[in-house]
Amino acid sequence: MSKKIVLFDVDGTLTIPRNMVKKNMLDFLQELNTKVDVGIVGGSDLSKIKEQLGENTVELYDYVFSENGLMAFKDGKFLEEQSLKKYMGEDKLKEFINYTLHYIADLDIPIKRGTFIEFRNGMINVSPIGRNCSQEERDNFETYDKTANIRKTMVNIFQKKYPELQFSIGGQISFDVFPRGWDKTYCLKFLEEYESIYFFGDKTFEGGNDHEIFISDRTIAYTVKSPEETIRICREIFY
Ligand code: M1P
Image (cartoon, rainbow, N blue to C red):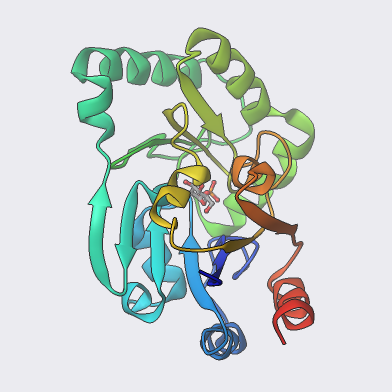
């Protein structure tokens, strides 16, 4: 029982947000994996994680957790998935989706595109600008939202209306919605065999999607500002 695992968030930690991983990071993760177990815990769904880290992601690492671990894989094999649909029921879901779409329809922001709601296995992703904006529009929205606080305001209002749900801002243009407790700490239930669980993430501030796992008693956690910093700190700790 002296096993260690190092868990990594994806966007901002292993890659530039929503971009492909660089080769030096992939090489580094393989090298690290010869010393300790390695796991990935992303807020995104599996298709986005694969888009960024590679088609063979699930096979490459000891654990891969997409949607915070609401879909879990170990040694390349599927472990378990959670269903938001089953958990909330159709009536509640419909009410939430209708309320969200009404709210976004009334929002006056510089531009809007399409796909304002993405329905996933264990969560809903809400984007005021719409998920199918271009990379340039996504970058501009992120900058705009730093002062306009569109997402923070929505999350505050939504949190009051839906206290049983949890809202977290993990990326540039959206926020994730899931039942209380289905944040990144959810994945820790699969890791009972480990004595030490390290975690690296960029959105560790309150309201960010790395916050709960960052403050968890089960983890030794680090905040990073870039993939380069992730590699640097890991080299200091594990080499
Ligand atoms: O991995 C962090 C987040 O990445 C995306 O966010 P955005 O599109 O806003 O940059 C989403 O997949 C989100 O669910 C996820 O938490």
